[in-house]
Image (cartoon, rainbow, N blue to C red):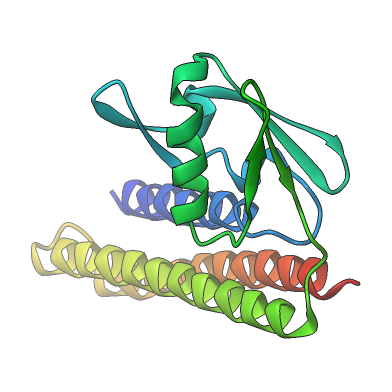
Amino acid sequence: MIEDVLLDAEEHMDKSVSALRSELLSIRTGRATPALVENVMVSAYDSTLPLNQAATIAAPEPRLLTIRPWDVSIIGNIERAILKSDLGLTPSNDGKIIRLAIPSLTDERRRDLAKVVSRRAEEARVSIRNIRRDALKSLGDLQKSSDITEDEFFKSKEDLQELTDQYIGMVDAVGEQKQAEIMEV
């Protein structure tokens, strides 16, 4: 029973770290990467879908992204979606392909993006702490129902804290790596 609670907590914590990694991919660092725009939501065909489901995204040069819609009739919708996003990029199209030039980041913009990374990392840490709280409640319920002893409860509580510290360390490492990438000139 204790193992199930700890495994469940570990699984959820791992998902929190994975979610943070994928979120941070969408923050631009001055280099062109398809992950920067692939989750921009585009209105097309009476629904809203991610850009990577409506077009092929490529980075032919370090500071250029090309977006080739599968259906050229939605090229205007894609442009509007990119302009509405908080990426700060201006698309240009030739009727078939949208080009996004990735400008180099100003020092002020780098600091702003570093703050965004810090905020997202803090959200991931809060998520991990909430998972710990829920697991601790489950362990407490097991102790109250006499399914585990008090000693087992305190031992599992220590194990849960070690697990939490490990995953918070991962979040910190991911956040610091992304901040270093952003601040790199």
